[in-house]
Length: 209
Ligand code: PRP
Ligand code: URA
Image 1: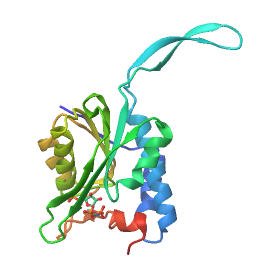
Image 2 (image 1 turned 120 degrees about the vertical axis):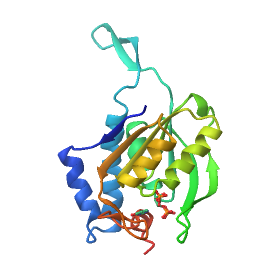
Image 3 (image 1 turned 90 degrees about the horizontal axis):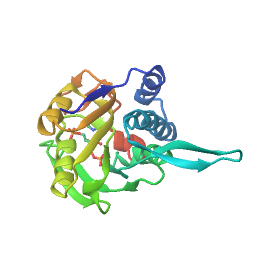
């Protein structure tokens, strides 16, 4: 069974509060999403395997640890997930990036896929799927279905804000994955928006409303 990690770190809580505010500008919103993603990514890679290598320092040689792999793929769910990519790449600059295009039908709330392109050797990679919002869970479940159909196995999901309903749906559909949420909110409104939430993450990142 995968783990669910909800972050209680004061810095993350502070930044999530800023993220929610209607007074936060598009520029500030992007920066906050990037910063929170960096904190979460750092924690999510805590158990990455290491291997010992010998290094020559200016004074001597020593045995020391470096990452042993697997190589990482970050996969944003378009559009809003794009806002989290830079936060991962700042910590893991060698990561490859896949894209899954998905939007929620505004009437049925069902996810629709319009694009999927994943890095080579996806089956061997540590995959981090990123999307700021886990609302009904439909988009995350569908995205991870696509990745598994294409051979992906070792998957983590990372979001800014989750609704309990979406978390339950995702855990039931994909019990093997680890889920990282910067904050767990109260629930969904009648339009399946998260309350108190932060509004439409894609619109706030890209300034489209
Ligand atoms: C948002 C968000 C998630 C999805 C979450 O995307 O970024 O992908 O909704 O909702 P769910 O858990 O109920 O599926 P949206 O469909 O608004 O597309 P966008 O990123 O292109 O704006
Ligand atoms: N997608 C968003 O961007 N915000 C929500 O609250 C729910 C889904």
